[in-house]
Image 1 (cartoon, each protein chain N blue to C red):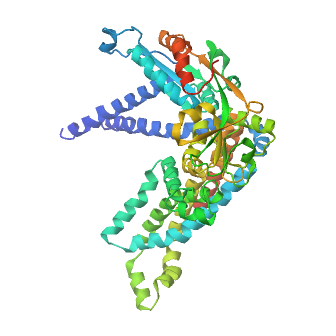
Image 2 (image 1 turned 135 degrees about the horizontal axis):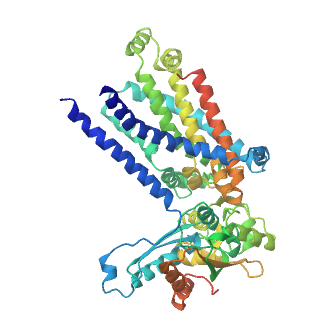
Image 3 (image 1 turned 135 degrees about the vertical axis):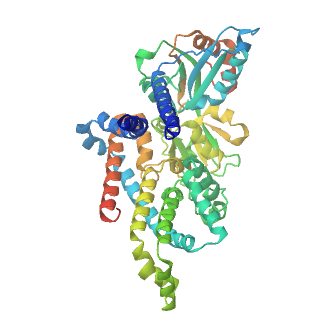
Length: 261
Length: 271
């Protein structure tokens, strides 16, 4: 009886769990199966790939640095505050997480575009953001920063609040406390936040193509190139996709080995 | 005994959900071939002017958006039992989608060259129904002061083109080569409507699109003509991929005098 009941619940849970796994894993395997491994080196030597790779690496690195410099203080304010407004700010931060990226791109155009809320005041100075690498970074930061802030805030909330009061009684400023105590203690949280944000930035497509456009060497990142190459030569698109897959797995693997548990 | 009743719910529910999901997946996999599905609407079988039933899935080049929306509207009005589902994108994307099994009864493309990668075994019939030429679209205020194709090489003029993988991008490339102009391109967009949008939003000073797009955009953009010696003309094919009656009726309607007149009212040329 017991055995039968256990078997039934095993199936009841196992079947949907297996389906979930299949839904996620089969597409990755399919990508690997459809790859022409002998062609990958020559495909990746396609003249469009190197500029896109370089652009993707620079913009995602700048995005990661922006997250670190701007996102860490924001995470700290959110973590230490119990004000009612804090939960509103946190809710606002979650919006870009769930917003379709293309909507984010439209919002960025309305902000930084030539006729945008901020952009129109930059135009007289000859500063135009759309179609530039800066636009790519803005798009990536828009979608990636929330991941970083929420991850780091979670880590900072886990800190013993007495640490901060002790540091304060010893005369340390907020900045000094963060530099010497707070940040070193949440390094794993910062690392996982960076990894998440970086991976999200690397995969960014919708906001980029809407806001930054698609131009080789300037705004054409790897995901945009995959989209365009799919129409020119699908095999090249598959080869680039496999490279992206490998880079993502590699970076997440390194971070996991170093900091994450 | 008492432990049995709470268990019964998940035992019957979860497998039911699982089989339901599996069935969904199976049907999703099964619908690779376009088909007419009976809508079973009593209104259609009643006193309507047409007894046709079913769904016609039309994939059309982005430049056909406005004209095919109108065709769909008119055709559905004449055939209440038929639903026309339209999807627009670059011709290159649409052909890829069909080759990868996207359900489609009809595909209409910008230029006969775009049809080359299409899996020939699926094609039942090909007819041409329209022509189109390139035109420069500028924002209403013409901030870049563009008056001819030569102006597009100025560094102060931000030019947006279609990507050179899609028909409008290929045509633009050919035209610039003929005109010996190297444009100051800031972006290559995925299809012609995305290209036009950058001008509509005022983010770009000029875009090379089709004449029909300038017509369809009405007051949102101004057109600057490209001389015919350097312009590139495209002939639009409509390709039938399904044998069902509703699909044939839709294609026949498109090729009828009334259908062609509708398409031409959006700035296309006669085939």
